[in-house]
Length: 322
Picture 1 (cartoon, rainbow, N blue to C red):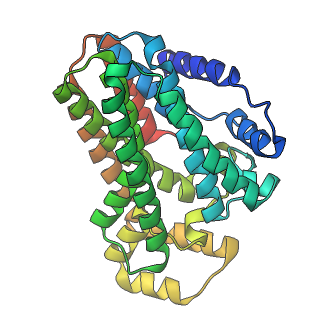
Picture 2 (cartoon, helix red, strand yellow; picture 1 turned 90 degrees about the vertical axis):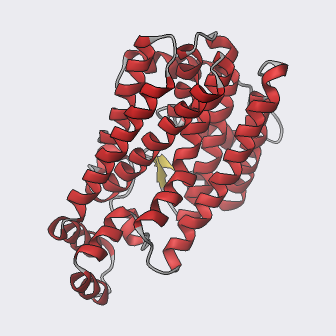
């Protein structure tokens, strides 16, 4: 994470998570949950929730448990994503279904949302209906986005608009939700909370575009997962969509080679570069980042320092190397 403020938030979240008690029976259920949470991570979503709360003058501790709830829910989605993607590593460590088995991973994923709801319910009673409405909507949208992602693997060639809808639902809405929940707790007006939510959506889209870019072009040691995973699974990130549009004949010829493994990854990444898809994806990412900055400006708030940190944070999301 790029700023001291968000490192402070992440540390507070980690400390709160460390105080959670997972020493329960049956240990076969709770040990994987403890393992998932100790894998670490950037704690982006809870940090955004805490920042949004303080942006509007709210008390940090009032948002802490809801922020932890958002992190628990995010980890649920990762556990199930790893099963569906057949991923062997997460953050450089074995995934739950690899370390144990698929059944235990499914149960771990099932248990985490329950714990997330328990944490989110700790908001002040008058705010609970608004917070849960936002969260419930986001939870369903996240599932919709995951299904769209699966559809892209086996369905018709996706368009840019369909891709953006998918990543909005799969990734961006949880960032937006985290900001909106924090804004509600902090006392933001509905208009301010909406602009901050839209900031989160645009920043989240830029984040996912960069995530897909890193899958193809990132340093595997920094990213912490297999290079070219999307390529090997025949997913349709923006790089594929642009490559197909920019050089349809070249794309068809590449597909007809039916390459496998590292040879396939190398050929596809080379084609992304030569076709101009890499450059166009980078330009789209920058446009989304600019949109995020406009929404953040419109969101207002009483703390200029936190607003500046949020702006820097969005830039880091879009341009990170891991």
